[in-house]
Amino acid sequence: MNAIKSSDRDILIKDEKSSIYFKHLEWDTDFFARPCFFFDAGRTLFKGHFVSKHVASKHIISALEGSFTTAKIDTSMPHALVETFEDAGFRYILTEVTLEFFGRPADKNSEGADYKHDDVEIRKLDSVESLPFEDFGRSYSLTRFHIDNRVGFEKAQLLWVEYIRNYKPGARNHIFAAFINGEAAGVILANDNDDHIALFFVSVVEKFRGLKIGSKLIKEVTKFFNGRKILTGTQTNNVKALNFYISNGFTRVESTKTIMHKWG
Image (cartoon, rainbow, N blue to C red; front, side, top):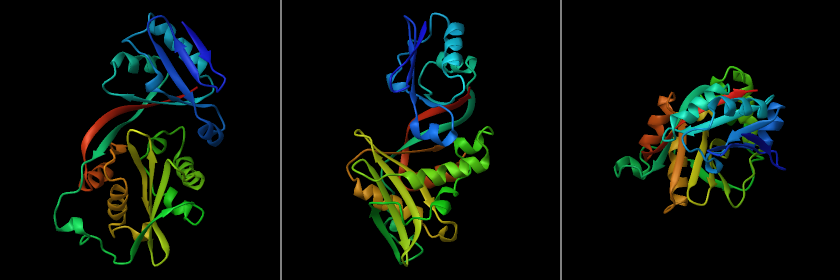
């Protein structure tokens, strides 16, 4: 059993049976002012167990000392992996569900009659400079960062403010915004991950809520990516968000993940 650190600061824990890969996160490291890592399931080879779970846990603890690490473990993976993380000091935060877009129901509301403001304009932006970062970033309260008391509510709010402020639209990263009379009212982000579009960060300025801005954003974005597989994610504790996505056509459960955090 050994721990290997790569030149890009990623960490690999392995023995002759299995391996676990932790990817270094540069943006998170800068924000939290400590090394940050993310459990990379795609580069992990877990064959049900390590030769010694106790030794594996000790190596994980040592390799992640002084860091903040997130593990999103698909619930289809062996539970022994969760137990290994628990032994290494990871703590359960919440359960995340990934939903796939299958189209809104073909009823009278799908044609726009449900939108409560006639002057909503959706634009695809090349920059985030004109957006109200504070209003968009502070619209969340149930993310994994908000729930983790080691982060704290205000720090979690600031994280999302800084995330949207530093988001870089490009060939793979897309941002769509809703405007009412020239004022930014809502925003949605969509990343192109080759095999699917990941739709996330749906946020509406408080004074514009209740006008179906979020629904109109999803309608326009899913139309833009028509023919592509579109996924979004939320937390099972956020019933309002779940119902919002389901009512807007995200009606198939793609996967569920156990979210765990470790503070080294």
